[in-house]
Structures are given as C-alpha cells and as structure tokens.
Length: 224
Image 1 (cartoon, rainbow, N blue to C red):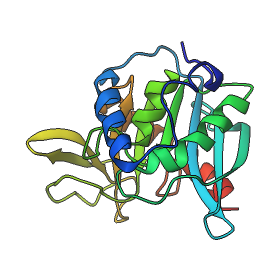
Image 2: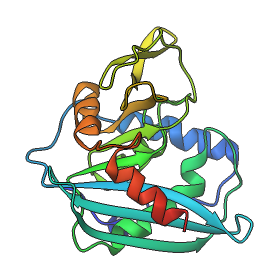
Image 3: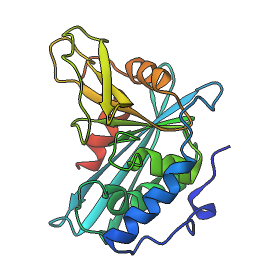
C-alpha cells in the first residue's frame, strides 16, 4: 500500500553533502524490489521536473491518467526553492522533494508511476524512480531520454523493439524503441516492478509520441 509523503518525510535528511547523498543511496538501494508487487492498474502517473528563475525554483509536475484509456484524471504542480546543486547521479536530491510534495497533494495516488529519469540504471542502482518508489511504496519505472550508465547492442528500428542495457555484466534496463525510427528511451525498474512489466506498461502508455503519455504530459506541465 503506497504511503503519503507526510509518512516518509523523515526517512532521511535532504540537505546533505554529495558524499552523504552517495551513502544514503547505497543504503536505500537494498530496499529496491525488482519484481511485480502490484495488482490491477487503474491509474498511471507521470512525474517530471522543470526549473524557473534561473533554476532557483524547482517546478515539479505529477499527472494521473486512467488506465488503459490514458484520460487525464488529475494533476498537481508544486514550486519549491531549489536547495541542491546539479550533480549527475544525484538528481533525486535536487528533484524528489518537490515531486514528493506534488504526490502528496494528489487526491488519487497512481497505481504505477513513470518518472522522467532513471530507476536502477544508475551508478549506484538508485535513480530518482527508485528513490521515489522506495520512499512512497508506489511501483515506479524510470523512463529516461538519455543513458546515464551501461552499454547496449544496436536497437532494431521498429516500434516496440528493445534490447538489454547492461553495466558491469548486470542487466539494469532496456533500450526501447517507442516509435519506428525515432530515438529510443532507456527504461529501468524503479521499485516494485520487474523489467519485463516495466517495458510492457511503458508501451501501453505510448500513443503517437516518443514519450509515454504519462511523462509527456508531466513534462509539458513541468516546462510551463
């Protein structure tokens, strides 16, 4: 059962040094569940973050769509002061506090959350989708537009085809072609879902665009 932000806000401090962030990531990554831990999906969510005022303000957007219809059910936009610098691999400490506040403001939590960013396809196997998933209990998928770590073979051009993303001999995600001939997305488990299901749900949320409707709509709202 997902929990609201006010139940997990003290899980760890947010105003910490980069070295402390890495320690927290290394500690929490052991709580990530890489298998399906959910039942019927009636609502899918999308989460993304933008910035305003020369990055001084974090603008987090979360949308909730009905599934499988993908009709907009609810959305929230939260603006907060940006308190953590941009450091690759540590983005959840810059973006997650505002996203957690946006999730907390929802009337209907999603059964499955697609995050713009990485799940375990991360140097310490704990990207933003894993972080939010572990803290809230919501099954979460990382849907990234670019690769952070890992290697992959050539990807077939046809829509729906995918290849493994590996790092140090471990499969950490899938490189998925959501539209024929268009740049792929990098899909990885965040929490409480297996990779095969993650790929299937991302494709089920794709319409005519490269991005699934969840993160596409969240991106539009986060970008203003």
